[in-house]
Length: 210
Image (cartoon, rainbow, N blue to C red; front, top):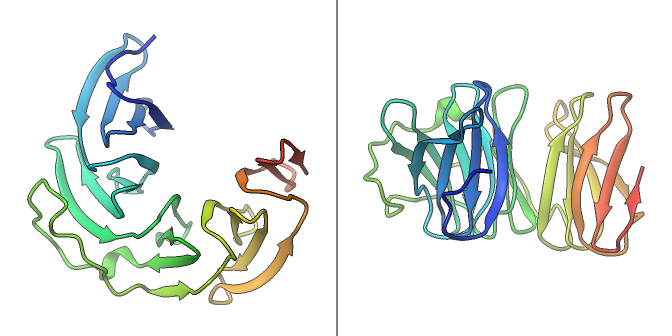
């Protein structure tokens, strides 16, 4: 049992080095050694609830929060907030297989090329947040807020919304709309892909659909 958070633990992430990353409703992130329960690193990249976090290819962490920011933080030698995006009503974030990062802003989807972003020396606050020029925007991708997204083994971007819709977008065709799945009646909670290429979704309607 790992203890150390002072508010609700919202999301977890297994890092490539075998450590566990946990994020909380007060904006706190803790990196754990799960073998002995030791708190290896403890910091606050956000001021409010962290909805989602991923580990980038270079080992930095990217998280989106209720404080309307998407922050990139390095933590291995010294905790440093490197880039802070404006990310209004963002709930989910991922890094595509081509290295670009994707997060939602309410009903829209923003795509960024990391190597096009300026180098920044931000203080360890979120005062420096701004909206960098995205590589691509999908406007009104859903009727309501997007709450989950994954990249499929075949390469497409798959998104789920609060209205109960699942949508597929072709990354190789500049994020053109591919298909819409309408099996759920209420908010999509999560989407995964099985090893044999089937989508599994769960919803507030208390159903799991394949």
